[in-house]
Length: 343
Image (cartoon, rainbow, N blue to C red; front, side):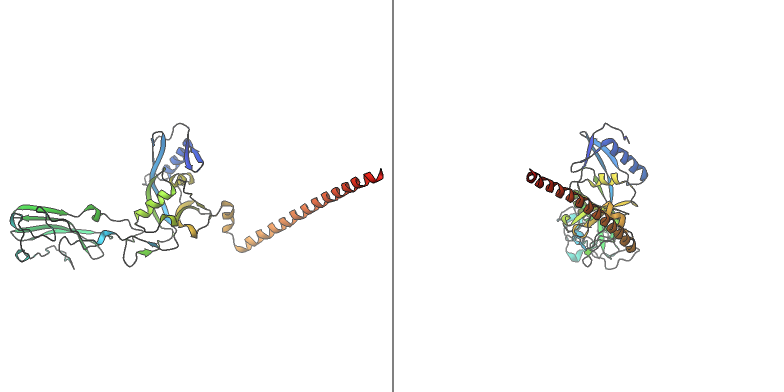
């Protein structure tokens, strides 16, 4: 990667800028730290604008439960009837003719692994959301042969990936599961949508990541993260915070760019992390306050006592100073009042 370039300013927030060369030096350090890992960042220039992109680690710091959207994973596959395709609602005979249900051969699963509670091919009753184990086979008679491939899930269901129909050596058609239904939703530490546990709280401190670029603001990153896990809660309920091990908490504003903020903070997550938290549950902690957070109460009380003593000394100094000034002013007023009388 080329980390050189001309000197110009890169926006990193509202009325906040950083020199391009300085940002590239931070980026170089970041990539060296994550060398050989997928957390390395790439950069390019488009129309003279520097764009950095890659994965950003975000830790869950929620205190209240979140709600997951209901996905259409449990919907049955019902493709439209077609003379060239086989599906659960159409029985095909020789030369594509429709047979009565009584003329169809009994379909038995001949795979070595028994299929408990399996539904008819094409019913699509299996649930997505667990590690799949695929298997397949072929059943039928000399007239009609169905070649199928199922995928079994740990939830107990079976989901058809592909079903082929052949009659007298002629291919009647292929039914393939739509990609939109086969696609898995992302899990939060292994938790997928479930009717009983659709409302839950992610483990505090557990890490996820999203692929973003340096032009995306905080609200855009929040919406991308919520959409990735199909979370119903509004993005307005949450905020991103940079939390340091010292206890300092810095909230990212709506105009900030989280990826640039992460680069400037440095790559080491043992020093600072990006957390997703509720807006109304977290208060910002400045660096000055964070210095005292981890002290024990007796130590903090001693600090307060020292500060009170110092305050008393300063008050006494000020009182003495202004009492002297008051005497000087009163003396001067007496001299002025006595002058005309003497004349």
